[in-house]
Image 1: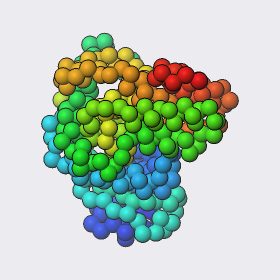
Image 2 (image 1 turned 30 degrees about the vertical axis):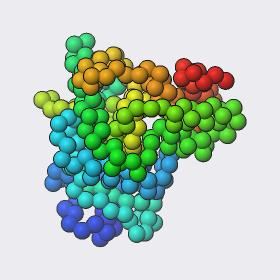
Image 3 (image 1 turned 120 degrees about the horizontal axis):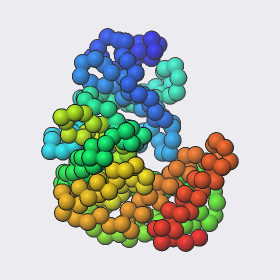
Image 4 (image 1 turned 90 degrees about the vertical axis):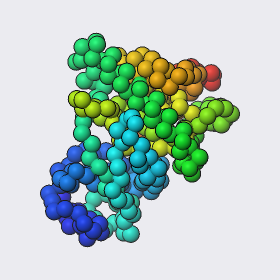
Length: 297
């Protein structure tokens, strides 16, 4: 990445000399190890649902709000962030901005790898994750008012999915789901917004770490469980531990509503890609998730 390295070094002052090993690459950008205890996250203008500009804004704002929260889980510190004046000044996809973030120890709590663990190890990991989410929400409750400008992740996700879904009946059911979320009452918290196992780092002797807050927002705690419809054999341990630490029972109706939001995003992102049977599975997943949430066809 010589070309982009040189271009970025001119745009961002104080970067160490390369090469910068690539730690990961996703739909919205790439993460590079700067070798000084920080990573450089490059955010593309375009990727999945939404815009790179909004994702850059939310992650930057959330990390700044949460700076200093050190109870549980581990959260990366934001060293610096900025926007690129010319998104097209690099080879490759146009870039909207960058974040320089503390590098945290650990590896993603990969769902597939969970099955290689012994039953007691899975239980312990699930309990640690559940406790970390509960404490994250406890911290997040203090920042809910300040973070209100970030919006609600569920309603935002439905709107982004609707931009790609044309079927009138499906659209009507998703509008109903939006109405249901808007009508829900309860204490709001700052949410991670995309809390899946890939965004949870685990390291021996360390508390779980949460990364990638680009979908952060304010809403009800159950909205952060939208990716746990099938997280392998540790979901019960996560829910049990969350309830014990938070002192509140997870509202399963809201949990089912959050799964429906995730199913809508899955369908919108997948669209007609892949084998036709994959598209049929995505449609069926959304249909069943909406039915479980109480929205019939």
